[in-house]
Length: 230
Image (cartoon, rainbow, N blue to C red):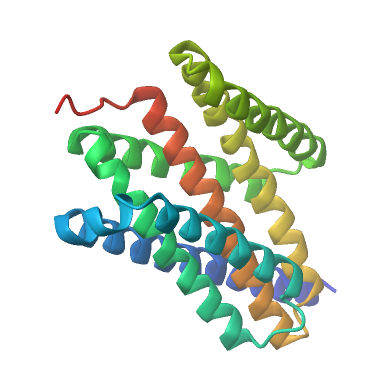
């Protein structure tokens, strides 16, 4: 029994390593695309000078996330990988705008703080014996409240409210990193014997943590970042 339990934990650990590997690869793709477009003013202007293009990219991103989340079991693993890669590229396109909006120092600082906070909360979520289900439920409720507040602030244009939303976002997405890590660790144990499904779960987990990382980064950047004056 001890050996069986140890083997199960080893395989679960390997599955989580896959999750972080896919997530890191997606972040690398996003960062590369964002920097390339930032260094190509003609491409940047051709995309962001037309609101229809930006809206199309946003809708494509939403469609890709929904497809991976709800159709994962029906699609092949290769198809899921291609959809995830496409999503990472599309996020890189939209993220290039922050390199124009914020100073490079702010972007780098926010990224390294995000990486540190993410690592700390992921380790906590992975090793803690506490059940984080309630933390995840509360975090999701607050997240919906944040979305509503952001929609309201689109009309109010209140810097104070935007600052408060960013501060709450830092807390919420930090908690979600721990919750999602624990949830994914538990899920990985359930599909250890099904290689295809285990790979899909690892990819889905990578997407989940990728979204947590990106949103934590954006919240921190809005909270502590310095905008360009020009």
